[in-house]
Image (cartoon, rainbow, N blue to C red; front, side, top):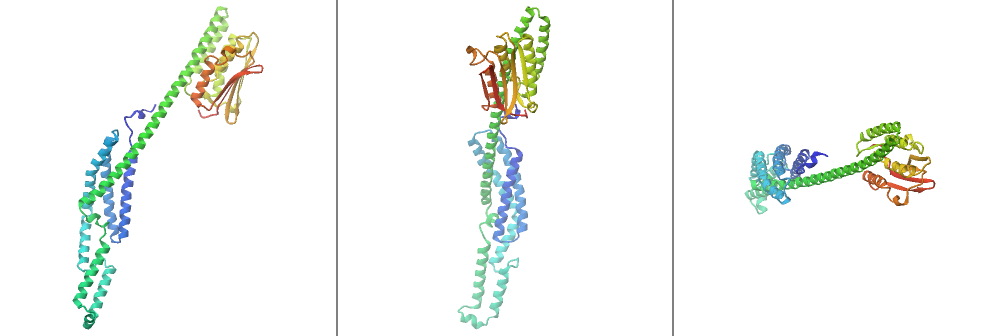
Amino acid sequence: MDKSLFESHARVPFRTVVISIVLLWAVYFALATIRWEILGVGMGLEMMRLRAIVAVAGVGVTIVLWLLLRLFDSRALWVQATAALLLAAPASVMLAQINYYVFADMNTKMEQIFVDIASGKSPPDGGPESAQSSADRNAASEREPGEAEEAGISEPDIFVENDALRGARQINRKIDLGMLSFLGPLTEIAFSRYFMMLAWCSLYYSLLAISKARLAERREQEFRNAAKAAELRSLRYQVNPHFLFNTLNSLSSLVITGKAERAEQMIQLISRFYRHSLADDPTTNVTLADEFDLQRLYLAIEAVRFPERLRSELILPPELADARVPGMILQPLIENSVRYAVSPVNRPVLIRVEAREEFDRLVITVSDDGPGVPDNVRNGFGIGLANVRDRLEARFGPDIVLESGPVPGGYRTEMRIPLTRNG
């Protein structure tokens, strides 16, 4: 099982944190730039340069804020919220100070521009307002003295009124709440950055909640896999002791009856059988070819017990040789045929094992031409059939079919499982 699943709490990956912080300040940079261009104040490139410095510094401050926030990752939600509210305050003050000092020179320039506009001087950029101001002054100077008097105003009044109106129009057009972001008091900037930091804290804790949910899902899946593996091992290990009990009884019978050569042959076959079966992980699938080879060994062992009665036939199409099945899944079924078909009679009995494919499913049939299963054991075959069903369901879920019952001329057990070839 993955040891990382037993960490005390989930973590948001550092890469994800950095991406979220960079995106936050990239959005700030883009929105502030667009707003400035809409205002049409000018000096766009200079403002972008200064704004980029603020954004880079903001990334650094936010990373420091994250390093402090992550100390509370495993705490209750109200503790995390309190930490965010408290830690975002000094971060926002620091950001406001950075913003103030970066834009200090620009603030001085803009203040001088507004003073010049209010005093009637031409704007430094020589814009249309300055051109209009010069034209108005020239037109006024070219008027005859009588023209002004006929209009009911004196020439000094004209100049004063024109300058005042022109200055008011300039101020109304240039001074906007958005532009006051760098002219306003430090506390106003700090408050705006405070809510910006709180927004990122909310995003961070959302990412943390997602990480916790994913970790919980992985843990649940790992525990399910561990439980499933334990169940498979338990079911698989039920097979070997049962088989060993039967073979030891057979060996005892051979020794008692003086059939030493056959007993020696059986011991060698048993050794090969267990060497083959114990080499595989009980929780993994094996190829159908390997499973058939193992069952040939088992039938060879039983043939030592019943040399005149046991006949076997195993049919495996080459295209199904690499199909995957749980190891030793056929052995309990074949053992039932030996026990209930071969052992009770004195005539030859054929045990037939056949694999085929039907509609992308693997169908394996174990049949015999014996007398069938007695009524008193027909509902279970002891532990054999139940063991096979449990192992198939543990491996494939409910998508399996296992049917067993008498047929004309014998008895047949058939399993239908998903056809898999990749283990």
